[in-house]
Amino acid sequence: MLTLNVIGLGYIGLPTALMFAKNGIKVIGTDYNSEIIESLKKGELFFQEDGLEELFDEACLNGIEFSKEYVKADTYILAVPTPYIEESKKLDPQYVISAVKSVLDVCDKGSSIIIESTVSPGTIDKHIRPEIEKRGYTIGIDVHLIHAPERIIPGNMIYELVHNSRTIGSDSLEVGERIKKLYSSFCKSEILLTNIRSAEMSKVIENTYRDVNIAFANELAKICRADDIDVYEIIRIANKHPRVNILQPGPGVGGHCISVDPWFLVGDYPDLTNLILTARKINDSMPEHVLGRVRNIMRENNIRDISKVGLYGLSYKENVDDTRESPTLQLLERLDEHLAFGVKVYDPLVVEPIVENQLMNFEDFVNEVEIIVIMVGHDHIKENINLIKEKLILDTKNISAIKSAYKL
Image (cartoon, rainbow, N blue to C red; front, side, top):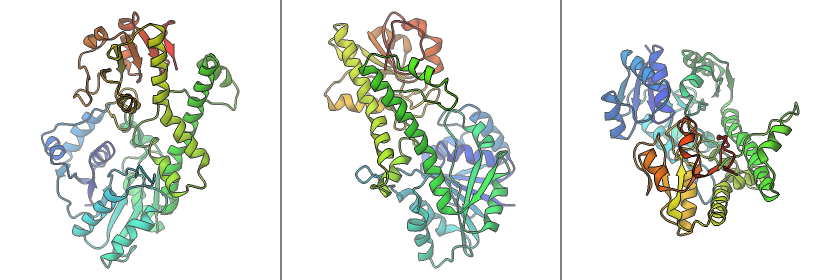
């Protein structure tokens, strides 16, 4: 029976490991964080996701194991972080390299290493192959190397694991077919086979495409604000054209995909990524734009105390607790740079305080502020919009029907 060791049990690795286990694969999940491992061994999840608890129960019934140690296995899946270096904008491959080294310490010859982490084009050739060859292994004989980039989003992970198409990048068609069969244990959509570099590039450009299109909507919001035009009405009308589909503007771009992956291309191809770089700058500028709107609202309503401002939402998107790269955190950094302290923050899904002045009770939050900035369109705020209708509202997500609400 095939044994699968999934390395990295975060937002991507854990659901992936559970899905394989549910569908009959012998799985050992590994993470260097002992608290995560102990939590999972006790049957306790450490983040929220629709359907995750049920999937966890099914995987446990099928005998999934959790360990801080790497184990001998036929196949390894690496789902570790891939941040970028702030100064150069290039990928920081240290976590992937470290995981590969640890796999090589324990694996038998003939094992397959699948990298699901998103990496910049050429990363596997430049950083991973040399590490394997240093050990005296022949890639394709002693060790099989595959890139199968993840393609799921928090809030809809379980459905997308099953129904999104997948890409398998491999040096060998035979190995690619074998890994395709492995993923077919749960993936009901098309699984495409290609080479490793094409798989690397395809994942990065998927998120870059989305970043560029969001940037157009955000720049349009700034243009319309400058001329006192309703950007949402403009987008609604323009989208009636059969070949136009403008997205909605927002307070910024967060998460570990759209806000990060385009930088890999900017870092590696600095002379060729003019549009991509501009899109990144536009989206990164939106928290500052929101701050400017807050300042104008305070002046217009003669409010001088910044502590009377409340930011609703800490996560990077609606109905999840994932705060990675969130626009709210970016906005709080801008406030800190301006020496503006005391802004209140509330998010119903972030149940442990992670920033100063984060209130844990919605009623307290509402009572202590005069201006509420809706940064995230959680269902919670939509269902409780009447409780804040007497406040000054800056609705950056355009979710309320309150006519007096300010917009981007």
